[in-house]
Length: 163
Image (cartoon, rainbow, N blue to C red):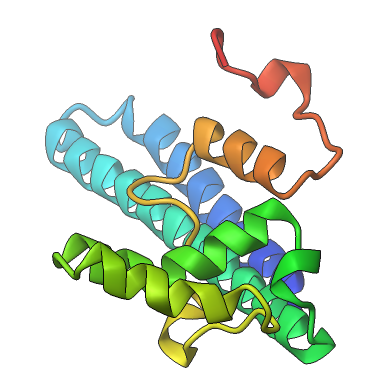
């Protein structure tokens, strides 16, 4: 089963949970006796479902990014032949932690030069690194799409104004 198939299955399951929650909420509106307690429960279920939705999306993104990186490694694509996105990605995977921890810039440059003539490669721990930090939203998705040079446009009704 591919990452996309697993994600679609998870989305279907979560959609079912949300539909059942909506039905439960409709039925509880007429029951005033326990309305507030059940309303809190319904809100908790809905919030948990959205967290599960985000986690499923993040997990699928990790799996897809790892499989793309592994394919690039298997194909032996040289640093100079790779798209700018993947060159930056491998440089960040190798050097970003060192730069943030205060490593000498001269040492980083010395290690960088040989990288430019080698095939792209990531450490095993960095292969499933996400190309965004924090929450993955519309802006992150569109930035990733542009970085990967993917020709795709979001349906107009899903776009947030200003993006």
